[in-house]
Length: 459
Image 1 (cartoon, rainbow, N blue to C red):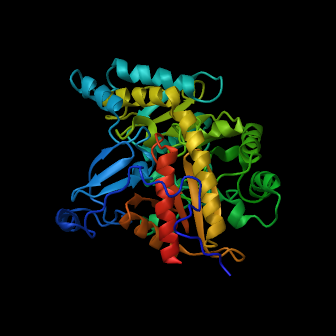
Image 2: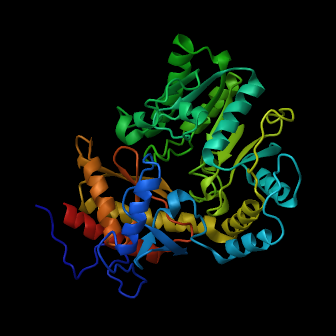
């Protein structure tokens, strides 16, 4: 029989505090102004957009988001892991304002300006490994992946690519070819870029057939060499293997410690480039500047975007200097490396180095501990996993069978929204926690207090 916990007794560390800043919900959703926006959106915006609930954002500050009707929400999405330093951080705002007064645009692929070279220098220095690096700027994650795809083919003279099931690398045609997430993302678009083969990512909770976590990481790499390279894919035709250090859209899946080192050894053995897609996992989200650092691996190419400029549209491909040796005109970009976005990125990195990296580790550990406590209370929580403030909660119908329950997952996310907590789904049946890296333990307490109430009501 399930033990009933008294409402007067905090069931988690920090639960029950009354003086913390709380969400403010004024009226049912959507409110009157939100309804006007939703009506116009339905008339003019592409129906291909995915929205989990009717949040009509109006203004943000730090961890908080206010909608057009005055409701205030605690944001544990960071705009899909983008506003790393919180909404409208004063230093980011000032950096952007100062730059807009001097120069907004001059196309860094045709001209020169200080902001772009300064940021390139910084990214080259903070990228993992001791090899000299060079940087190509983009506007987004998918553009960064496209650039990496092209560079890998250009550098090696090979055409084939290996990617992983569950991976999300973007929606443009090249990056979509590498994506192995959902069939709806590829349906009706016809032939994609040929030569891409997908293999199993080490999703221990759902796919492993034994209990040896470390061995499983090696097995997934061994399959590439012992099966793929012997039966269907000649290794000397493979330009690169692209991998997310932690799968994002695939469910916030953290691989074993053995996986990335084994993959690096394999790629070196066959002269294959290793591309680390850090679009979601990079820029401090896991407590290190790049998630791949947790495995002590230096990739040949890194793609990044999302949290790099605290909300300004910017992406980058960082590669070893001897890999990025293509000639002028081989690849270019009009808006990539915009001077305003570059200055926002430099200020973002400064804030990360001044303490937000450490905060992501501390607060992330606290979040994980509390979610594990929550999982002991509710058997619908099948797994808790993550690093830093990149944390996933997998929802199941039954812990023994691990049967997925996307309907319950979606219900929990929607009910949390109505209580003032912003969350997003990932994978088939998981909830992602990707708050701004300024999150404090008090914010975690508030979020988990709401979530506990939602679970009680839903179950």
